[in-house]
Image (cartoon, rainbow over all chains, first blue to last red; front, side, top):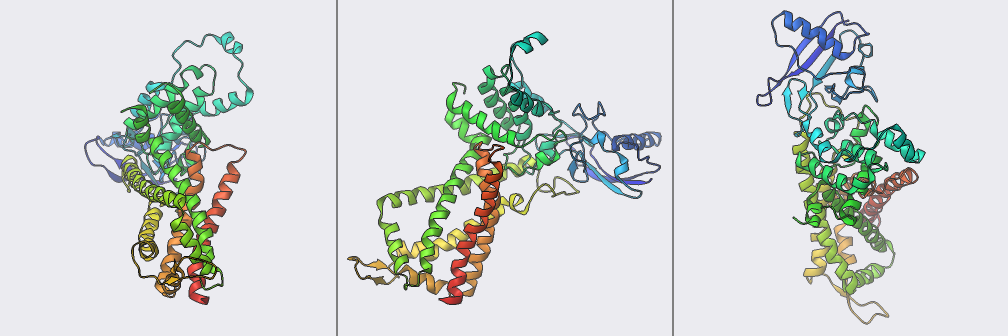
Length: 250
Length: 230
């Protein structure tokens, strides 16, 4: 089938970008949307044009590297899936697809569809870790974790840090990401000793990066490829309040 | 900055201020509506005028009213600050060429717009009644049987105002804005202070929807009934 594309082309952070039209012939329904761009890029390179830059890595929906806003939706129209898992069988001959980068003040465009998500790394570095060694497998078995707590922590541990929540949020807020990381570690016994410091420092870094304020719209939850719930945002708010008003951390 | 100042300017701190002031304003709406329903008594305004006298002379209520003025201002100013910050964080209004709005609703997408409408309404509403009541001697004085003091006849002023069709339309339109604002704001306020739990989340959301429907409906009915029947 033939697919028409409107793709955001931007040389670098400091130049203005624009939408450019392309069309790809003989698109197989078994291709992912990224593979279709691969085919287009192959064609562009043969013609001596600049290929479209886009982020990708594992191409099986677990690394969080692929980004892209497909027809106005981060990771495309599918629910609970990443861009690399969006297959062309969802489209028909002659369809037009818009490809744009994840947009937020804190995610500057590097080139075309590639944005710099280093802000997330700096938020993790501010507290998304456990400082001491948590031991080997047998040590994990010695620490009892209630089943329900383990499940809740596991649900948020699924966050791949792709940034779709920020790209979807009308406020450019990173609260779903930060709430997932804080909810994951603060609920588990290994994460408890640093719970207050983690909540305060991660929120502080999130603010310093220029992310927006959550207004509980829920767009993040709807677009999250790992279906992380905004009840975690309420948990982050609780963890943050508890840390600010009851701990000695500043 | 000490720890408390850092909290106040943090993203979550700003939202918590919005939430707490919002909850206080929602409580005020309930009290205000119950009071205003006195207007519907068929007694020529006696119940309403005695009620307004009580509300403007009770020292506790007077104190709370100052708190209310401050709360409205904090909620409005904080709302503007947050909205401006959020527009910058998202990367402007036209961040995507192809727009998708399926994850948002009329209520939550235009929270600030509804808020601005409500604020404009407040200015008009306060000028019409609160200012006239407090700072002018335009209202006639009445003494009801069994009462030793004169009271201002605010009821008469209300009856005159609500005979104007454009005033009635303005009030109804602004109450629609209030309904949208509350439809998202009620639940959102609780989510922000961390009150979200699978056991009562649905109750909270349903209560919010009912609250957002009934309270503005109650307010909107008063001018409509006055226009049609009084």
